[in-house]
Length: 374
Image (cartoon, rainbow, N blue to C red):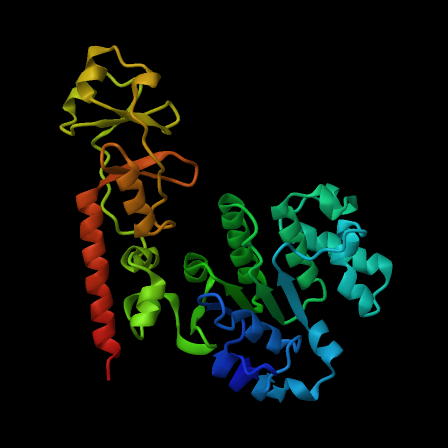
């Protein structure tokens, strides 16, 4: 555990970057520091590995004051990942990842074997090992940065806005990869971001900091969204925090119907039997093709080009109610398409059914709150 006790960072000109911050960062969790520019997120992170020395207060790592450890020993016990990866441009990818093991005295063969193992763990093809950073995409470079930070198997991983310089699609992939790695390795991760959606997705607990380096609230993401501590936290979370909260409600119990789902080669009688205003047409494997008016299908003049798009499907039990609602809103028919992990349709959900599931989830949450109340 990392414990910060009344930690302050004051610069010679009187600027206070962090002000009497007290925080307990649990083991084997992702703690996210989030807040507006100038709130002291990065300064807080850098004080943990003494890249910035605190002016006052104490930082304890597993009960020991980090000021009592040699700074080089402390830093080698912590992985550090920054924006744009910070790779050595003159070294191959394998040698970049092997940097810390080599500093710790590992032999070249052992260090490179560890680097190759980590390339696979972070989703990099082995063929990239002999390339140089400039030959990789931004997302690949960030994966190398994560692998390098993990190379000596440190218990603590510090990450300073590591995914902010890549496009949204790559960023989502990197976030998913980090969650997968964390599930496997169980590191103590401190992650800095300015993106509240990233904080909600990654954080086991989230520390919202306000300008001046003071802690506004420290809580699990679902609690932040349901019960912000004050107006500042509420404003920072945004006007759509209710929609964000749906990310923590599972879609497993959502009512699905298969009545409007018909294969492309279905007979006219089966198509006409559907009393829905639209039917979802699937291919022979059961994957969605698009929506159509059933009268067009029974008339026999429908073509794939004439189908309405089915939008983005969701996977019940895996995706959240937020994902299901998003699918329904994006669908031209107002119905969300549910598929299994192989992309085959398992049913559709109406906006009314999704609304009922949301009400049930809120009711269940209130019941849980009542049971744990003193």
